[in-house]
Length: 591
Image 1 (cartoon, helix red, strand yellow):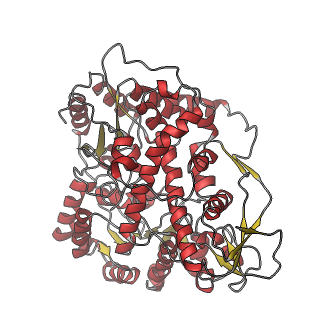
Image 2: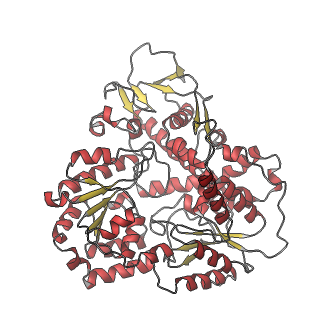
């Protein structure tokens, strides 16, 4: 690899991090759209002015293969990381380390695999063109406090991605390129060395949350504390029958799947660089013994993805021979064509409780016996059943996140496809009549680092469109018409609440399983789903005068009810009893 302290001959610069001030298409080539994250105002029309290398995962089969490679890398790397964390790591069962490390390791593995494929695409596209590349040195240090810091400031952070691209590029350096190594740097997340102590109220809320997480069935989103206590009682019996939990090594490891990613370097240092302090400083039990009493089942909350201490308690539980189950907590479950993190973390446990579906044919579900699906009506959806009342006269347009660093390898849009996704919002609003624009409210996703500008980009282009703030549920239940530009949890909530809804997205950009695609066809037949922004706007125009004439027709309601039975199941007064019976059967291996 040729290095220099400064270029002797001016060469175009390949930018791996953020685009430098004053850059032009003649002087700089962006490695990807993330080079403009957070600084779009300085580069007007960057989407058209600058050229980008090909997207490596734009085809669904490529994305599915990458997800499986990330799963294999995750499973293969967990024992190696465990060895660095604990001198007696072999004294603890495999289930302990997999439960503790998998939610973090799959994020890092997904990032490594995706970035490696981008580096390969870069080298194939521009490897013979003389370029100057600024690299961050190997000695840079990134200090992440928690799993969430790893996501927000690692997977979505400019500096850490620049460092990761530098390591991957060094291992396969094109001869025509010239490297300029920048000074070492250190970044700490969070930046406060001594964060302020929480007040009494915050400390009390934290303690209450910890107590609720200790329940056999913790309080999940949309559930009351009373429901959590009742469902916990249903899990007090012995968990009979065989353990359906799956070893990540046997279900997803490269030896089992043959899906090893061809990395040009040892990935362990990359994992260790992204290790949060919450895991690095954790104490581990000297040994774990089987329970003196009965083996039991416990439901894990979604906090397992972010709270390392909570995850440690789950890891000890699993290491003792007990079992875990997860519960669906949002949309896309049972629909998207490739599953990555959810398959490793949630589907690998003894059971997974769904919002109605009982089969799933996605890529990435692993080898051996498949996951155990347990369909149940979800309390949050049941509380919203037929709750729409209208009255505000507004059209609510709901958007989703637009990360320019791909940090998840499920079947989702690539960064460049998200650029087009954002433009589709513009085409939709432009096609609306002025009278409808006047009562349109746009609901953006919450701010995420390393993302495309959302409302600040869209709303100045449409001065008559308003910003939608506050709880989305209240707006949704009182709107005249709801419009969704992506497949999401809100679609399931809207169907359960019987909200007049129109959805649109590019089908190939949001790949679904064959079964889910069939549902999309049925939604399209009655006008709920539209294939383009323009056709969605035309549909809004058709029904706007009186949406209920269309929405309450028997054809629409029949499809809506059938869709809800499969993906947004609800129940009435018998919901609690149904859950109690099912959880009781689940412990007896009869569900």
